Image (cartoon, rainbow, N blue to C red; front, side, top):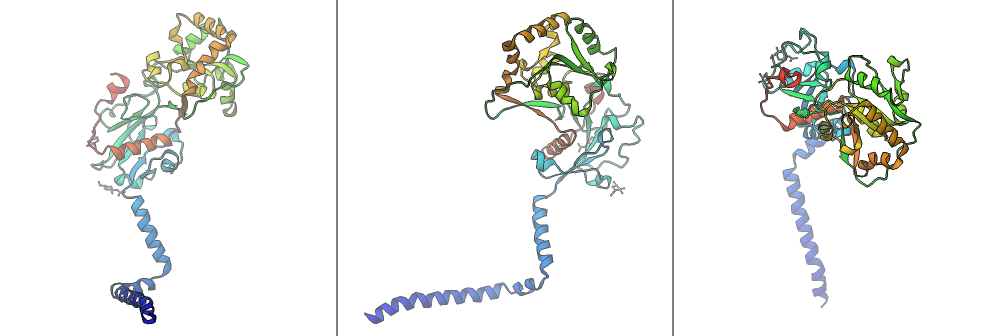
Length: 358
Ligand SMILES: *[C@@H]1O[C@H](CO)[C@@H](O)[C@H](O)[C@H]1NC(C)=O
Ligand SMILES: *[C@@H]1O[C@H](CO)[C@@H](O)[C@H](O)[C@H]1NC(C)=O
């Protein structure tokens, strides 16, 4: 009985020691370099590990070179991953990386007429030049020599390779019962570029004969500071979202600013159909919905008296929210994302017809 129970304890113990012994022997045999590894300075070991990790996550990042800062103003180049969930992209303005860049973004407005400030080195076979433009054809100079120069387009045009709109409507997560902020003006307009030849100025001149428009900007001797800009739009029931020129898909922050703060935009620009491709049809009033500026004025005055009708212009907020894009960083990140997903050859040979129509 006694020897039986001691056996029961001893046998597993001996077996355990045996297994452990074999394990230690094997370990020492196979892990001889272990000792020499230990003698490596600790610092360089952690450095080594760090490099391993970083080469793993940055494995062949897509490099996008900002050749010219748009309008000469710099922006933060390190935001693709942190703000826009675009990973593995390296935005740079360092021209020494030209030969390694998968994409080169060239902002149209900053190109010199003689093209002398474009890259002069040969284009690596994998590299794509991206034509970036946010202005309308009326306000973009048609430059000789760029028609067949680029591989990709980045603009507000809905058929751009990389669509870079001024804003968008996105589905909202929860239902929100939106109450517009308090208003002390009926119709407002802030205009920075006053040109009597503009369609919008002609329309405004007629409209203001029938309804008071609080107009701001140099043309009216009423400058609005950056700080007062959005609060002014917010304080009005309606805002004249009049584009400086009328072109297909050319819909700018003039629409998205009032939408985002709870003011109803009255739009003048491309067709209602064009607008409805990017925002809900009941979120704005289109001048084309009326036979004359007077008709529009009458309607705005009617809405001023009828809260229920006015509030219908905020129904869309139950299901949608406005997104505005961060210029120009977000668009550059989108370009990088596009390049990562589209490695195929691409040449664009008719920029002039595509953008200027001839
Ligand atoms: C880029 O490549 C070209 C040859 O295609 C070479 O002449 C030039 O020195 C290279 N530039 C840099 C910065 O490496
Ligand atoms: C980019 O466009 C140029 C000019 O059309 C063309 O020569 C080049 O092969 C294109 N590159 C790529 C990567 O598609």
